[in-house]
Amino acid sequence: MPVMHERCEKCHYSFHREPGFYFGAMYMSYALTVAEMVAVFVLGLLFGLGFLKIFFGVVLTVLLLSTFNYRMSRLMWLNLFFKEEDEE
Image (cartoon, rainbow, N blue to C red; front, side, top):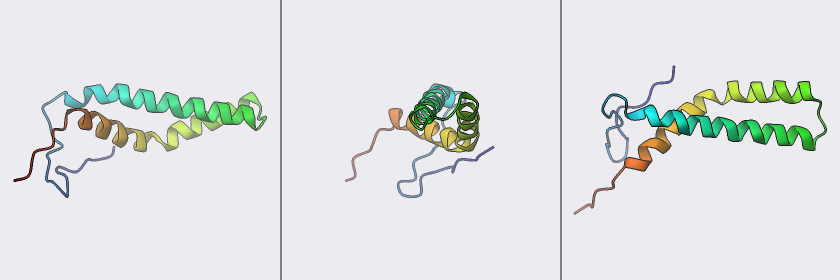
């Protein structure tokens, strides 16, 4: 399982929130996965591939991008609640 950094290297913002904070990131990950699956399906149709090839392409894409989706969904969820502090 991928591990997130504890703090941002630039601004030292803590990525560790209260327990259950990243539960909403699951929905972000789902949306990313569905978008990737639809994109591969449409590309498969455009290139005239058969159903079985499209199916395996979708499955391979989901497996290869699972780690990317994990990190991106958590990052997107965190950015919804990030409040930039004014530097004085």
